[in-house]
Length: 57
Image (cartoon, rainbow, N blue to C red):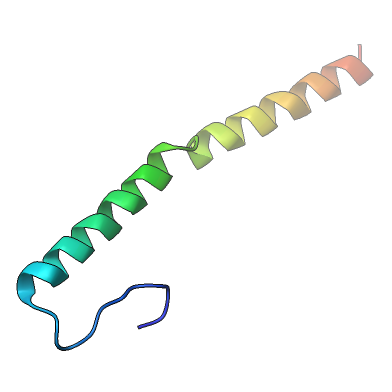
């Protein structure tokens, strides 16, 4: 399997479940470690608004 997962057909259900739980936690950690796209968009809009206001007094 691509993507760095060491999973194959000979693994037990327990081993597979543990591996998937680690993957799931890793995805959650990545999602929680950055701000949401909504926040990115709002920051960009506010920056553009500030630029517009400063150029058009």
